[in-house]
Image 1 (cartoon, rainbow, N blue to C red):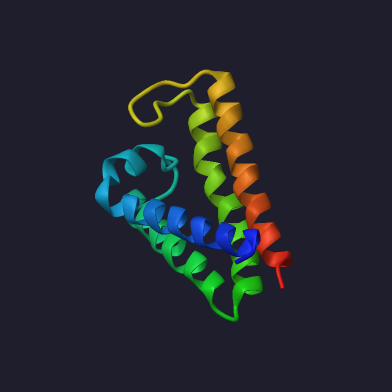
Image 2: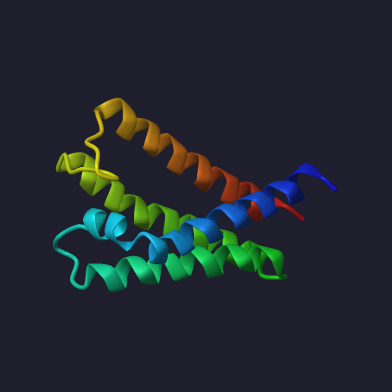
Length: 122
């Protein structure tokens, strides 16, 4: 098995777990949905569903389309993290400093990069 295939499986497992966490720990996500977005619980649970379904498509013939959708989703959901950073809101019950927020941004870019590698995979 080649390394990219292993990477796909790890990525899928990580995001399925992250998506399920929207339902297991909803208060965490309620707190980071920007206040101007109506129905925050619905919005983050819908996001959780997308975080489960889109990566599962990596295991099908629709891998390239799923990778594009995942990149778009990751860019959109980073908006919540940026909102927390700009407004100095608690993240997971703790206030983060600029270095921690910047690291979170780098991690998001990493996840986007992995989705792009998966997109390129034949």
